[in-house]
Length: 142
Image 1 (cartoon, rainbow, N blue to C red):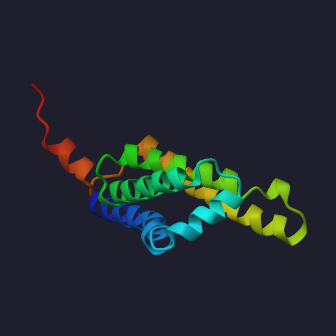
Image 2: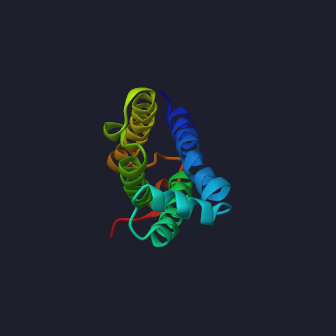
């Protein structure tokens, strides 16, 4: 695969995975803040208002970081932390029965796969078409 193709695919992949996190923040959590706090409280999340503010910050910073390829590893960690907490509190299929358990297991596995992408980004970085890649290519060795 050419470096151009590899760079473009890395950019498209980062944009695709980031979109779900960005839209979660700006399309759901921010405009429905009070409702989300109530939902989180009912799910047993401690300090739901504080956790929601933190979640929104992690979603925004993490998604924009990964999308732009700027401090990508930090962005991937922010999104990974969000995923671990959200998955634990909201997709606890082990506490459900029947169809509800099935549906929560699907959501759990979806989040696990996205967590895998964050691990991959942390391990491999963003690729050439990124701000991290651009910054690395402009550094000189003394």
